[in-house]
Image (cartoon, rainbow over all chains, first blue to last red; front, side, top):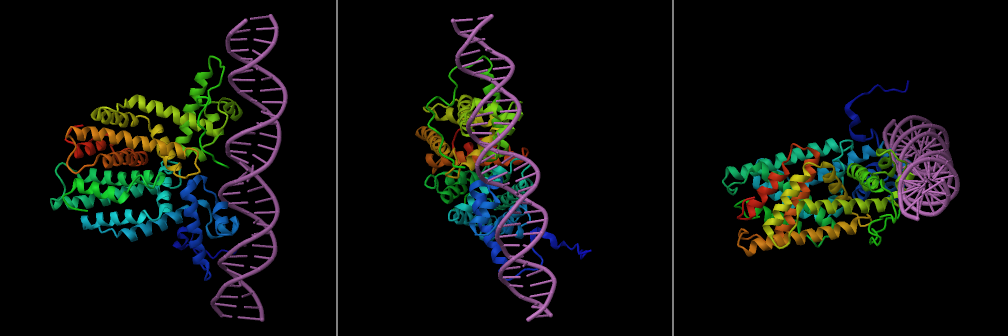
Amino acid sequence: MTETALSTAEASVGRARGSYAKTESRRREILAAAIDVFSTSGYRSGSMQEIADKIGITKAGLLHHFRSKEALLEAVLTLRDAESWATAGIVTDNGRATLDGIIRLVQHNASVPGLVALHAVLSSESTDPTHPAHAYFQQRYNWLRDVGFQAFSDLQRQGKLREGVAASSAARQLIALLDGLQVQWLLDKTSVDMTAEVKTYLNALTTERF
Amino acid sequence: MTETALSTAEASVGRARGSYAKTESRRREILAAAIDVFSTSGYRSGSMQEIADKIGITKAGLLHHFRSKEALLEAVLTLRDAESWATAGIVTDNGRATLDGIIRLVQHNASVPGLVALHAVLSSESTDPTHPAHAYFQQRYNWLRDVGFQAFSDLQRQGKLREGVAASSAARQLIALLDGLQVQWLLDKTSVDMTAEVKTYLNALTTERF
DNA sequence: ACGAAAACCTACCACACCGTTAGTTTTCGT
DNA sequence: ACGAAAACTAACGGTGTGGTAGGTTTTCGT
């Protein structure tokens, strides 16, 4: 039996057990190519072949690093999440800081249309319950609404929310606004200044100045 | 493979010259199935075979009614447009009426998740410049922004827009809000009341009561 | 009731898809 | 410098794709 009978939790997300020096950089290369392809063609229409071609390896070579297309998608989503939270710097106990972080994220997004397209395409594609990322995006939006709610609640506690504005509603609307602006922006970069629009919105329903 | 722009529809959307009694109903049947498939799988991943199966005919039989997948997409988009404007009842010379029409449309949309999904999936999919519906959606959003702008401008002329609110900005934001709410709603129908959210937004930046 | 056109169907084409198998080359700890 | 594992490649299997070719059935004006 070639089994090592080692059922440790090491199986987490396709990470190989032992690897060489260039392994990490290759994986990053693959992820970058995958983001490129998934963001223009979506997950379902994007092909492993195209991703492999983009970095000059074989489809089989690609599948050596990621066991399946689905595993690759998972890695892409995880990576993007980590990067987003890093540039946003979410702080749950300070509403103003959280909203500033979101503005910073929007501003940053304007320089990486590929990542924006990735989110726009995947989030709507995952609307289908059979999509591999369906549960992921459900969770994500739940979490996002909660973060927004806490941020606006914090402002409300300080009397900085205008009258008649509910924190939960503001959270849902802000997230919707972000997503919707992205589509218009992706279709025509000159049609919308995402950052300006978000600031205008926040200025309209708080007494703060963003 | 090579995805070109939608043809400029010379022969009024693939309509056959002579036809029998059941032809029209068959075409409607096909369009309904196509909407069903495109809205859950998108245009690129949705297949002619699945559409044909759904109404119990052959792929070749389907292609007899619509010369290509692209022609079918064009017909679907045209149909959906017509229906939307019908239920919204856009009137360009009355801002309040236009916004009421939009609210009516949002309310109606909540009863046809398939059509909502169709728009959400296709609009973000068409973000890719090589997508057959790319130009269509670019035009559509331009037109939409203009309709919104005129509506808010009309209100502004009557002093019904709150101070500091620009008509053009309000238009962009309202459209973004509509699109964004749809994604959240499609992922979890209980997470968002689209109509209520739109009304809240409109109440916040006008002195009208929606 | 005839016949032309519409409405289908079966069979096929050339290609693309994801993933596997079995082998070869490269890395690198020992 | 040996050898085991990682990092690949070439080839292929099985399925699905949009679209075509050519035949058969159904419709329906005349």
